[in-house]
Image (cartoon, rainbow, N blue to C red):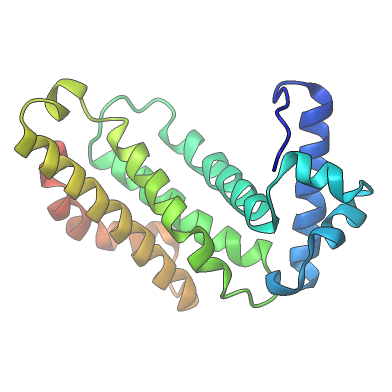
Length: 196
């Protein structure tokens, strides 16, 4: 169980960063399955109690690291966008491709078991990002409109994640920009209910 702490406290921020950096270096050397909390704590030069004061387990630190990486890529891409349109969707899709490419770099060892661990969280974050651009009045107009918008955002987020995953897994034979440009007509056809 984690201890309540002040997330803004510089010591908390520093310790979390130290633990995440230790984890990032370990994932370069070992398979995720073989990394232990003890390994992370030792690499960070803290005790295990300190680790548990910040993270529940190694899956928690993995999720925190991946979500931070994902948002570091997505936030600059959507900065300045005010509505959900083709340009916004393309920016998000490029960010998802960049995230998958970066994941290959972050985890140099073959860590195929990592994908299922974070896949749902990333899809949900993509969906939340898409929905953040939807006019709230449109979302609440009717139950049917809300259902269609929610379903379209799920399909779009899962489609972008899956397409970027396959593009990356097959060796990124074309650039992310070319891949996204070629697939945008398919994406936009599925986004009709989101764009109105």
